[in-house]
Image (cartoon, rainbow, N blue to C red):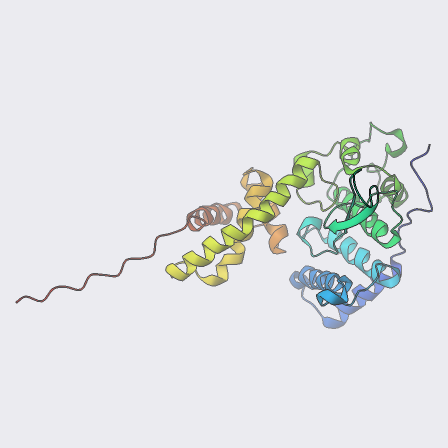
Length: 305
């Protein structure tokens, strides 16, 4: 049985949405170094609008012009190469699990949280489109950043990356395959370095590492905030920067300074820092992500009798 259904997924037409976004950027007369932040803010607004009304959102459906604007903003960000997909605000894909074989409701699908990919056999068109759009956004990011490998594992996608222009037709077909993420990553032969910036096409190991980092970063932020309260040498305005540098080190596995600088730049939505600056900042981050003791009050001198 063919695992591809062309009616199951079709990539949205982006020309109108691109024109809208480019028109707003021109009208606002945004400086070049503020465009990425503005686009990320738009993605943040869309993520909030997609939240249920009960959670303070507007319950916007992921369809039509709303969907096209989301994808167009991501494609423009890809082309600018400053902020990777993983470092952007996004609309989460509700995760579906099948209930166990025992008890009432066995075998039925249920929403259990986010983020993850939907089960292909479950008819949830908006969520399926969102999950698949994210795959195409990741493929586009890989191509924009120079991936030109031949896809030896599947001849159907042999030339998907090896093209002067992004092969949207093959990317759309690749996303429409009803495969698990593990198989996609294996077919693409994605190395860990290529997965650092991706939001969807992550191996199980890379995904679990990312979950672990997000769980631990709250502790790191708490340490930084505590140290800033205890020592004036750490200004509070530096906390976010040092926190994201810690995240970059964890994502890259403490790789080269160049790699850390690249990922840190994505997270901060800025161009990577120079080597000398990054070296100094790494030493500073490692100093302040260890909890400092509260400075002791000086003892009052005893008066002579």
